[in-house]
Amino acid sequence: MEPLQVIAAPRRMRILELVWDRELAAGDIAAEFDVSWSAVSQHLTVLKKAGFLVERREGTSRFYRADKEALGPLRAVVEDHWRTSLLRIKHLAEEEECSK
Image 1 (cartoon, rainbow, N blue to C red):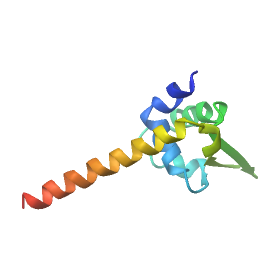
Image 2 (image 1 turned 30 degrees about the vertical axis):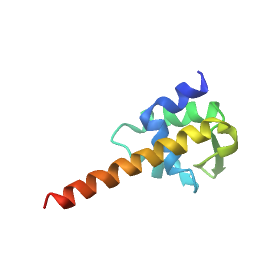
Image 3 (image 1 turned 30 degrees about the horizontal axis):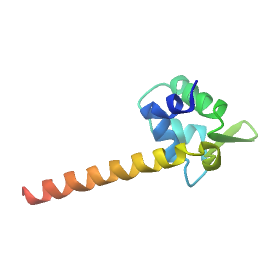
């Protein structure tokens, strides 16, 4: 799978966002989604195979964190996506506040 295809899926982008600045257990990541554990596991596998996630095992638990360096030039695309999303949320909140 091409690197851009890997990050194009909204759930995979959300996983990267969750583990961008911290390490999370697989269960904590899965708890953020309204899909089956199996679906989340598949997304984790795709991200890991692409090299965008680092996995650490501790006993039976698996912990993940983003490998920002592995994203290379796509890192800017990911960060820009989040900035744009945050700006959109800010504008919607401001519009809602003004309409009250």
